[in-house]
Image (cartoon, rainbow, N blue to C red; front, side, top):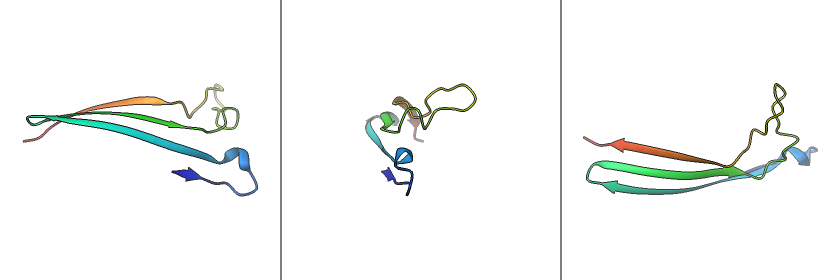
Length: 65
């Protein structure tokens, strides 16, 4: 996806997600890489200065009945 902020280009960014999933006889395992190209200074937490748009790995496990 892409977010455009008019008159504030530093706030515009693109985000992405790449997901893999595999079913193992009723158990579904998934993993996703989620990230963004957001500006590191604009999207820093005012509380502690940490960047809020880091790339991360999300892992899931689901059981079907």
